[in-house]
Length: 111
Image 1: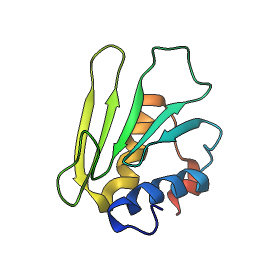
Image 2: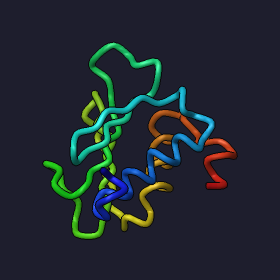
Image 3: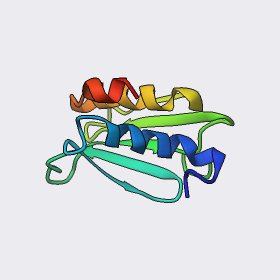
Image 4: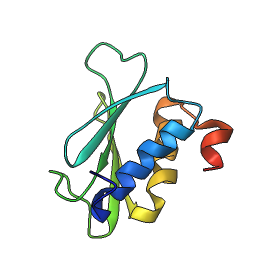
């Protein structure tokens, strides 16, 4: 569905970048219609922090033409950035590296 609707295409691009990376085993995710929620694996016992990629229609909706990526921390030190949707994939990997220590590897960088 994300490929068919331009307002969600960045979510599909992020998933494709994970599949193209060396880190498919390092991340787990679930989705609602408007959010992609990502955690490192193995999934820790709750409570645990997550990274949320937001799309239009989310309860925490990004501005028009923007993607919102948030780190929701168990310590309350949350972090959120909004950028143009064209920056969604690099911004996603920035959060994966900074928050979970998961680097896409060489394959993910060449896509």
